[in-house]
Image (tube, rainbow, N blue to C red; front, side, top):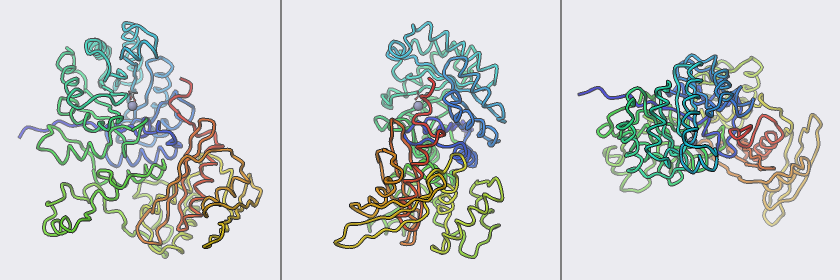
Length: 516
Ligand code: KIV
Ligand code: ZN
């Protein structure tokens, strides 16, 4: 049998994924996710857009320092200062890539860039040459390629390959294409561009019509050998192609695909959980591969079939994608070393003894309430303790809530507010509503609550509830998370976490849009 081609997996959770409103991540959160991606053996990690803000620059630099196995990539528009900034941020990387882009569709060139096609072509070539000063690994994207004219695309691609681009990424920026059309576009480009054999063709599909994965897979069948994707399909608007779906489709249907990835698929579910915890974007239960119900069989007929022979209703094995979760890892009697070791196994490196002590104290408090501690609980603990990137302006000291049949729920909250303890009280339509109102009597943030969601982190009534609160103020959107076995306390923590992010300069509304 002929050897299979390799399909390169380019993850853009930390860049395009972060463009989801409210999904801003701190530097340390990005490093945690990058380490998880590296553990999964993702080939290329797009860590951010260094020119967008000092925070983005630092995050890309920190990922470049932390990751040794995967290539670390930074995004840059096709302008000198973006490329220089990306080159600078990527300096510490073992393997670095600059990804530069400029739009090629008539609508973008006319209305957004206000440039003639020949000017766009010249700028693309110049950008690639400049990026080559920093690295031999240069990726070029003709933005909105999915709505560009094929003849012009061929001219641009040939010229940028000649200038030194080694990866040509074809984005369906607005998710407009359908699989047959997109596959044909890839085949045409590979066939018509004379020097196409000197570059890897890649695709980057958005999910506006729910076709991102289908379009990416069709592209692979037509010669693309890199797919750009994100964990849980996170990304701008309706998101990007979901990494887990691409990888498992290719792995499961090796009878159809002429290529395979090098990924350790058992890392998929833990990484999905980590991204969900950090961004506060829950995974829908029926989401393919990583949804809680993806391997659950409810109907009696299905259960019976699976018990007799698993293949009757399962095309993949749950354990192959990492569904060994809900494993009890630690308990009340576990010590500091056991905690440190397990955190390390989860890819969480603690920077100091003080940090270990802080997490250990939280761990002990949790183990007193909940005897079995799972990996998911540990991830939540670490997320909660990870406030070192920004100031904890509001801190929960105490919460007292009365909720009784026939009575109006009432909350009394004690907050440490810039180191001063203050008490706020309010009634509400429920205990959570009363708690948020009590907090607002002190914070007076004026923010609008955009989303409130509760998820049980693990199973059982003693599970921690993980709450996400999304707040918006003046166009700035932030997500706050909180976890606790008491969901009203978890809600208060999540609300305060969001408020802390709102008052912090680290968090931005749309990092990629700043300074552009
Ligand atoms: O969707 C898009 O076109 C992008 C480019 C920067 C590749 O994200
Ligand atoms: Zn995109």
